[in-house]
View 1: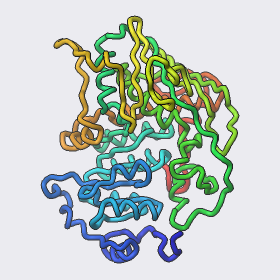
View 2 (view 1 turned 135 degrees about the vertical axis):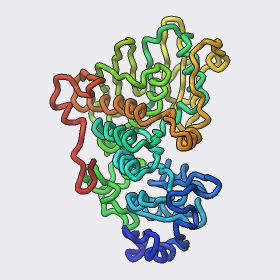
View 3 (view 1 turned 120 degrees about the vertical axis):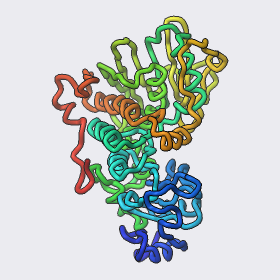
View 4 (view 1 turned 90 degrees about the vertical axis):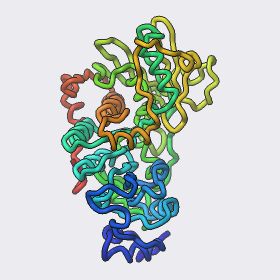
Length: 437
C-alpha cells in the first residue's frame, strides 16, 4: 500500500509547477505540451495523439508508446503500470477534466467503468476531442440521448467499443444475411453463460492508492468492497448490469448490424429469470431470458443465459461460448463472440461471394483503425454513438423489465415506456454531487 504522502492528489499531475511533483512520484519527468505538438497545430508527421482515461484492465490495451501522451486513472497503481508500458514522459492526471484541457490531444479512449462512460464522453465532446468509448455506451436512456446530442452538436467522431463489427466473422455473416441467404430472418437467438454469484467478503476502508469517491463518481455511493470494484462492478445492476450489458453489448451489436436495424428498436421487452434471487454479493440474476419484439419488419431477438446455443452439438465451440443463431425461413447461421474473442461464423458464410448487384457491407480495417480513419475523414465510424446507444437501449430495457418484473411496451420513436410512469422514472438517474449530466 502506498504511503499517505505519496497518494495522488488532483493537482499533482498538472503540467507546469506540478510537473516536478509527478516526476518525483513515479520516477519520470512530465514535459511541456510543445514537445509533442503546438496547440491547434498538427502533431509531427501528422500523427494522432491520444489521452487515455481509465488504464486498468481493458483500458491497458489502448495504451501505446508514442501516441498515448496523457494518462488518467483514479488508481495510483494502475497509472504507474500504464506509465511503464508507455515509457517516456506522459502527462498524468487523476481528474479526467484536466486531461481534456490539453490542446494537443486529438482524441481520447474512455475505458473507465461503465457508469462513467456517458459523462466522460460528453465532456470530451465539449472539449473538442473525438472519442473511443468502451461498451456499453451508457447506463441510462437519458445518458445515451445526451451522448448523441453532444457528438452531433460538437461534430465529434465517437466510436463505441463493440468491436465485433470490425472483425471478419461478423463481416462475412452480415454479408451473407443481408444478401438473403437465410431468407427472411424471423428470430435471432443469443446465448451466453450465466452471471456469477460473488462470494461474500466484508466491506472495508478504500486503499490509499484508490480515490474511491471519484471511482464511484455519478453513481450512488456504496461501501468499498474489492469484490465489486474495478472489473467486478459488472455484477452490480446499476454499475455494470451483468452479462447482458457486458457481452450482450457485443453480441447484440452484431445482431442489429446483420439485421440492418441500427435505426429501429423493439416495441416490447419481457424478461424472465429461473433464479431471480441472487445468492451472493452481486445483485444480477444468474440466469436470464429476455425477449424483444421488433416491428416493420417483424422479428424477434432473444437474449438467453445460458440459451440453446450454449451446448450446440453441431459446432464445437468452447463450453463458455457466446453468440447468436440467426434463424430464417430458408436456413440458419451461427455467429459467435463479438469482442476480444475473435468473432467467427460458419464456412458457408465465409465462402459466399455476393453478386455484383448484391448488398455491399462495409469491411472495417479494424475497430481502432476505423476510428482513426474517421478522425481524419470526419465520417461516422462503424459503431457510431447512435448505433452504440441503440444497442445499450436493449441492455437497459432488458434489465429494467427484470427489475420491475413485467413486460414493457417501448416507443422506439419517442423513447419512452408506454403507460408506465414507474419505468420511465428509471430511464434516468440524478447523478451525485458534482458528477451529473
